[in-house]
Length: 576
Image 1 (cartoon, rainbow, N blue to C red):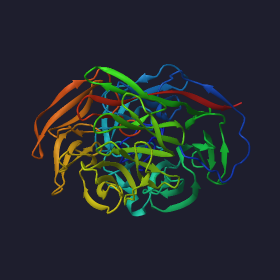
Image 2: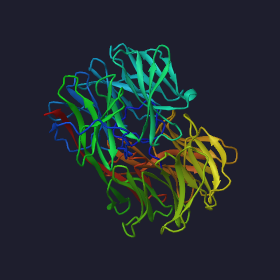
Image 3: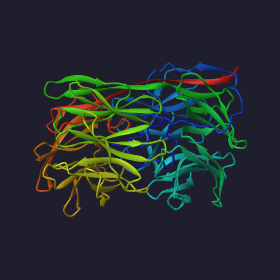
Image 4: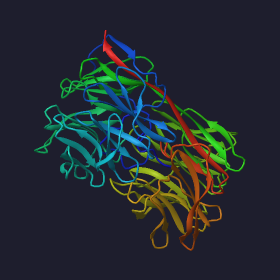
């Protein structure tokens, strides 16, 4: 249903895919193609530090190297934990609703800067040992300067890299992303604080197998190209600040740690074996390189709200489940190994499973009204996003040409003759296009009313969702005059649906570790009455999981959801 914005283990990106929805899930790291190497793997010793054996997303090392902050799922939400690099049990720092993404520690290590998925792009600060969180500033990817006097961050709405005083206050522009026509996925501050190292990708193809390294002088705004690198990588951090980079890269299907020398432009492999090894972080005290090793997993389940029974139908890191209109079929994706995803369909009782497609990155889209066929999206090795339709039995595969560089969601009209498609042309608001179900006659339809999720049974309204803009909520876009109508605002709900009879809109919300299924009346193009909770589920789940983490049947009989899990731990790589 939703194209995953960025399923990378690290989250140190200034812009990149930040305007999409899913921000907490491990990316299928594409192959790295080193153009040169400096020799054999250096003799090293790997020591396990933690025995966490759970999810460990976006780890960030404190300035003194004594602690690592990361997020892990608790009660359906990604919460922040802090763990000593000497070992011991992690300490949970946050417990409020909404997923978190750790950006960095403050320069003095006393606070953690992170994003809450509340709508908009705001960063918060919480004491490293726990306490009351406070709003830090509007923006993403906050990274402190080495002297602690300023922070570098991304302004997602304006498409700019900014710098502001560490104590807060107005920021100043240091790089215009829109004018440059590129997207800085990673920004690292040089030791002297005078320049940034930018890892740039084409914003139209953020998953392409090529990126550029450039040095940006903060004062003069002068750009110096360092290298064009073939191959996509995961996290990128300083090795020896200003001289080498540490990264995790996929070579021949194995994700290991590598070091890249900016002067010689050579790679040196740091770890070997099955991996996968992620998120290298060099200890400033000389202990070695901390990193995370492990594998994400999960189960896809279908819960019957009337019988109050649950059926497990999929594993191998499932994500993006999408139910057919009759609630009898579901499509979903799996990620059985790094760099490889698969599209599956199944009956909701778990029978008649069939794999329909495989590739580097796949996203579910929508079912035709009669559930005879479905649409999905694929990102190929060149970063191109392609749109396909196929019958449920795997026959009659065809590509649907589209004008959008980045796709996010689509929805069939009730007669199955047209498809509304949502995605991005540039940074900013998503655009909605309309095309025939055979892919012909694409035309721009509207912009500024969120992502299209569903079409009303009478074909007069599009149901849309917004979770990264203010206000968040559910909206209806009237097709006749393109008016955007608020339905339920100030809620976070990925997949709202029109009911089967079109008289109500159903959606889920999460609060205090509980998930509620809600319904609001709908008549004559407007919501009717107050929204009411029609069911409280006896379990919690994440709204997002590599895209949407659930879907609810239009007749309220079933809900399909992802139960994510993982087995990750912290290790240190040191010289023998």
